[in-house]
Amino acid sequence: MPAMTVSVLSDFLDWKEQCAELLLQRKRHIGNDIVAIVFQDENTPFVPDMIASNFLHAYIVVQVENPCSSNAVYKVSVTARDDVPFFGPALPDPAVFRK
Image (tube, rainbow, N blue to C red; front, side, top):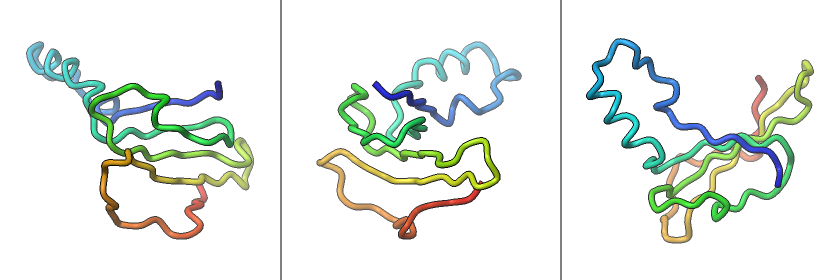
């Protein structure tokens, strides 16, 4: 299986000054996100069924090309479960961004 990393926004928030009850609430909701950002190390197809969840509806998939170089670019795509209607805004075509 190719390497991938799934991240949620709550991982990046500063919770050091919050009380214990709020920390407990944070733990309770990790994994209950609607959208996941997936960083793929290799250019392989992403299949949403690889991540078992009743809550995830959409995935933002990021793949790096030419990593560790001055020509590094990031390919971004969005995919969703079959029961999720189309939503915007649409990404540019091609959805390739420089660092």
